[in-house]
Image (cartoon, rainbow, N blue to C red; front, side, top):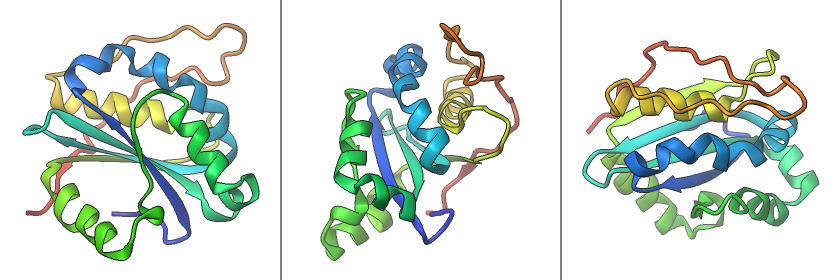
Amino acid sequence: MTMATDSFDIYILMRPFGEVVPELRRMLSPLHDLEQKLAVGAEGYYSPTLDAALLAIRFDRRLAASVGRSRLRSLVASVGMPTITPDDMPFERRCEFFLEHLATYTTYVQRYREDNGESVIDEVVTSLADHVLDGIVMPRIEPKVSTKFCVKPRFERLATPLPR
């Protein structure tokens, strides 16, 4: 499920997804600067049985090492939601996470970084919400100073069920 083998991935647990959607853009906005500098993309997963979503932020492994993986984890965790870092798990636990736990998430979306100033984090979460919550789209947050990180929603259908 990874976009590149040279990525350092941090997953954010969003649960219950239906209840946190209205606040997600605001909650995740502190990550935009970090995303612009270090992220190569993002993926989203949703489990209807858990009403939980996972946002996987894919960071360039070399850039993550230069910042410090521990510091990067702390910065992502500062948004106030639980995080999962598969690289930090023992091998057996990591296999269980990818092969068993992630398999229960039946909706999947992904975005790669482009040089258009849009946040892949916001795009993934918006697309995921659009697919699983009957077209409900997260409210916009107007930027305070710069429009550099203002998201223009895309409504492409990229969600595909995960294989069972």
